[in-house]
Length: 116
Length: 112
Image (cartoon, rainbow over all chains, first blue to last red; front, side, top):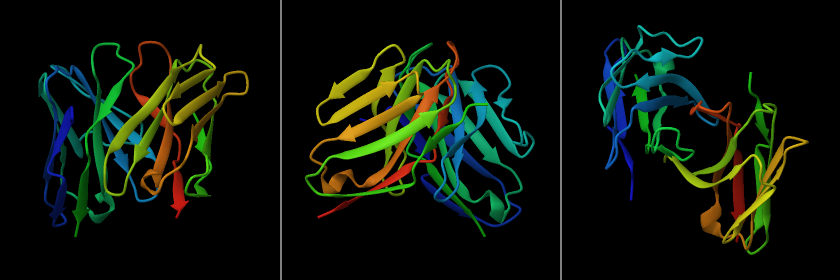
């Protein structure tokens, strides 16, 4: 069964509003979670690394004030897209290693965001 | 930085074997992965190989790694229509780093 869940699976919002996406690890603790973005017909691009209890690390070119990441517990990380614009429309996927140093990485089912 | 490349499309007939290729540039890669993505869904881990291995077989899947040429391939035997999807190779870089770098994905179409 699924080990990582995301909510919502699909969201449509108006331009200028904010949207929160949740990523939960099921049955295990995730000290690190990764957030990826996938544009249509393109590969996944790492946006940021979310660390429980500390600030997220953002990849070059990703605005930390626009994509707010909170990792307040060992099983939940949230990504908030603030003041969303149509160009933020994308498929957002989170992932986490099963354990510290684990080579297996589990992905959530993804959230499709459409900004109108 | 890391660069992972794949051909974009592959079509095969049902029952034939599929071979999806991937090249990467990071010589410090520790693990290399193959993920499957069906339409509108997240990624499903198919298999992985440690960088000191040349081959790994798992049922219909065979992974070959040529570390010298930095070339990875995924062979799917007896390809079925349910195998139609996008296949991503990904590499994990230096020891201790958990984030993955993905290829562009290969869209496999299986023709009945």
